[in-house]
Length: 376
Image 1 (tube, one colour):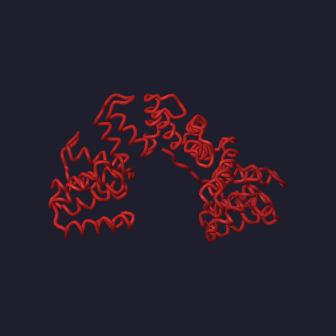
Image 2 (image 1 turned 135 degrees about the vertical axis):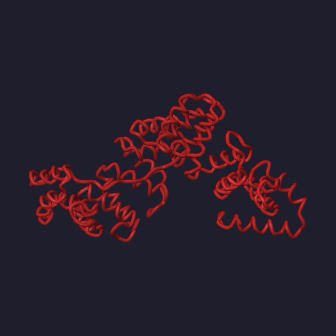
Image 3 (image 1 turned 180 degrees about the horizontal axis):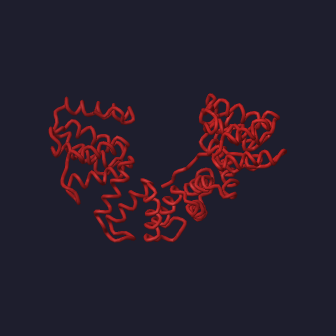
């Protein structure tokens, strides 16, 4: 499983510049939580045009520390410092434009400031500009340049860039696939506490991609990520407990993990939990709950849940029996490539009159064309 991350927090400027003593007094006050005193130290320096003080006042205004929160004023202050070439102001201003905070969202402007900061070696700007280039946000898509920027940032230890570059190397997106290097980068990010990297490393160990297959090691990574709330890791570890892979078989723990992941919207976990409720595996039979979970997964495009929901309706396990809905979901599952769905579709269709078959086809088309928004 690959997930890329992209976020940057505003940076307080701790660099010293003339007059350094007054700047440092403000920093000391800020770190002590006395934001009003920090403001008092930095305000006259900012009025004199000091880029560090301007940036720090911008942070106070952005977060409402010692002053009422005012994102527009934060943007104004950051711009004054950024135009003086101050790198921390450049990335902070780029972030405001990126997310439309205090200014109208402007990805072109965000990319401009990220690029200036990245050229000065700022690792967060390198990562954020890389993400824009990877996905064509405000700039022309350029995967090779995205990977280059991620590398520059990752080599400085920036955890999000390590994950993003690892994802590109794992999939071969814009770069030659290199699973061993992806695993190395995920490992570096995981050591810094990144949950996505930890989960991704678990999948590499589970499948033996870039590393020797090691189910116990995969389970260890999944457990760490699952305990930190990663839904994919919760699901994967649930599967391992259900099958006794790398961990003792424990159906109760599997169901517990499926529930955690399902509550976060993980479609495969919702399907597996629905199967348990449909057949009474570790829980009392509850066809209403099974239907609810199958529908949640089916409407995310999970093909096995679509097929299972069709079967649930066909068998009349939910009252009233709904053969048109059964045919609709079997048709959708078949169109999405679920191997057993065509036979189920044809079996259901053979029992229905032409009018019901036509109705099921119309509903299937409306469901599919609406991106599963209209599947009643």
